[in-house]
View: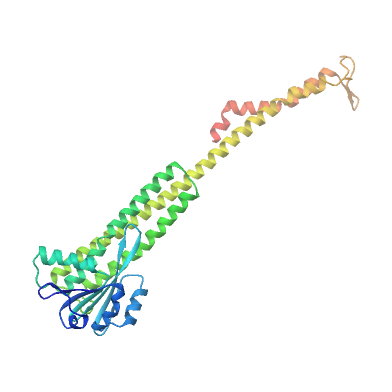
Length: 325
């Protein structure tokens, strides 16, 4: 346990029972939370706070319980901060570093000898909220990396990374909105045992606008990821279209080759018949009293099998294929 007496601004080593009778800010470690009972805070209330997932406040008869969170940039998780604000005390859990920073800024640098409970609560909340920019910078770096990778390669790995980052942005967006609501309620005198003056309201306005800026930054990153996802799908679609186009060209070329080769194949078949009568005055076929002689049959076959190549060449000459594409 660590305690800062707000009258005179000095640290105290007294017991929790004695500190509860003074104007004090007492901070407890997670393993010392049972000592909060000296300030009238029950174990049941502490358990409820451990289950809360978003910033909020709960008013009780003798104190107000505030749950706030601090973003952890490196792990992309949140650290829960417990603040209990009563008539003559502020009790926190896990805020020892904030207490040291408050003492350094308010007592050593500004020379304030009797800070208010509102100053303490604001310092804890602002110290946590101003770290939002660090987690946003982490998300921005991840968004830029995914945007660059989407241009270079497309695959299920990049797609999964985009959706994973979008889920994180949605989760932290909800978290920032709850921060913003809590700060607004504190500024509007809606929280018991917290009575801000004009100067404190101005500070809360700045904190409110800072959190609002963080929310807008998250929304901007979500829009960039949505555009990156559209780009990813567009590049995949273009790649499929190019593959289909190449297959179409190959199919057309093979069809032309097959069609053109029909004529020499047919002629070779005809001339390859060993018993074919090549005498001009000997008919090779008689149909309904009409005699068909060898060269007549050959010319007819050539004309018949020349129709398809002639049609292909005609449309090729007219630029039909180019206009259709």
